[in-house]
Image 1 (cartoon, rainbow, N blue to C red):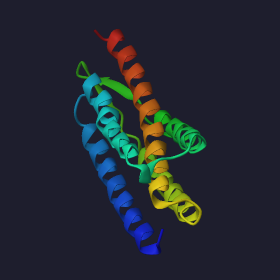
Image 2 (image 1 turned 120 degrees about the vertical axis):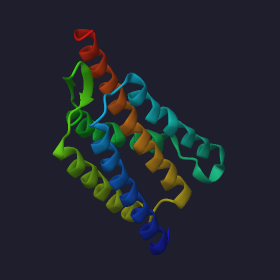
Image 3 (image 1 turned 180 degrees about the vertical axis):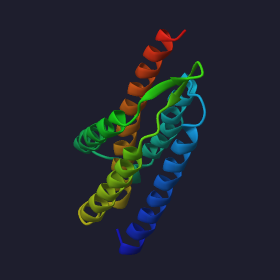
Length: 156
């Protein structure tokens, strides 16, 4: 992978991270629903279609590695995602740590991509990073859903 591609994809990832932080801050101003928690991983799952093309296919070990790293990273997101009841509605609590964690994960991703791009083909690396992200968002959203349902059950 050439340096320009790494730079461009890193800039795109940074912009996406900033967008996630902004969306998360705005979301804290509106009540949460089960639907709002569940939909992002469902929308993201369409990205798995990339694996239909041989260019993006990864080995079984790469699937395990990327998914495991994503699941470990999800712990940080789970720990910073808490809900509260306000005006008989459930809201996501704002967390200053969330933005720093997201930026930290982005930096780890950029460094990892820079190192791994010297040994792994671009398509495979793209597939691995999609798996990492999906492996991070699914446990995080499942944990959020469980927490939301518990809180909703106590306040209904």
